Length: 143
Image (cartoon, rainbow, N blue to C red; front, side):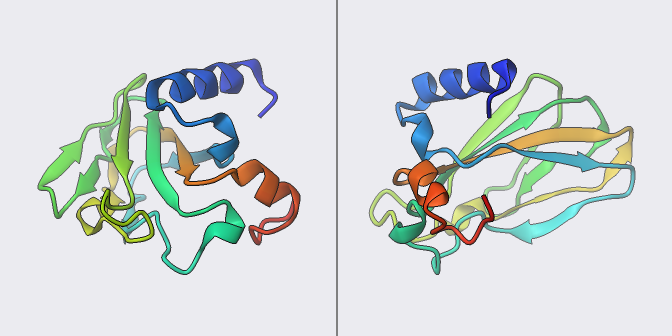
């Protein structure tokens, strides 16, 4: 989080979405080699609540490499996003009507990489100040 590149990306995301960086989870870096994938899942867990900085309301995924395969698939939307270095995709995890309710349209998976190595980064945006909750140990994460 102190890295100048991470700081710049975080600042740019904050400007784009209008939500302060204190609501951002730490970047999660991902690596998928040929044949690897991630099953269908949802990024928001209804069990996690306000004490943990609130629900994950947005996910931003940054593609850091070009590969064959490895698409991010949204089966409920009939949508696949092809990995391309420099590309990003953002989706809501909650509904506008009830920000404590999952938007079930955004279940997603990472399809198997066919050739190359897929590198990416997740940024989860919470509804409340996640940095303070994490500092106080309210997230279940070890600080």
